[in-house]
Length: 118
Image: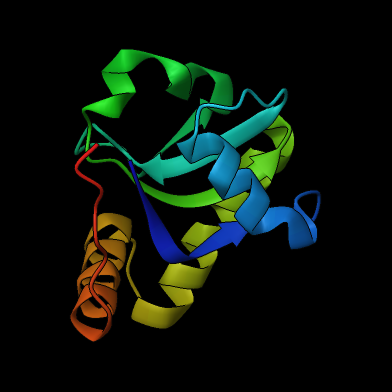
């Protein structure tokens, strides 16, 4: 699981953005926190996944790009709508995957991310 450098966080997350990220990456269960990631299915735009579900082994092996987090499913859906609107305003199209993958690559070119061997 990879977090987009400037990932979106809903108002309910606020300044706890990095703490929530740390908890998700370290399998600390969080009730009612949802992750917005690029869709695993090419036909969809995004997946909204409860953070507790990410504790399953299945998700550890996936290279999922997380682009947002929020508390509550309805808030996560609203944040996903905001993400779509932001991308549309910046690019004029709805190629969410292409936009975030390209932005992520650009961020990696500027400052590489080191992964732990453990």
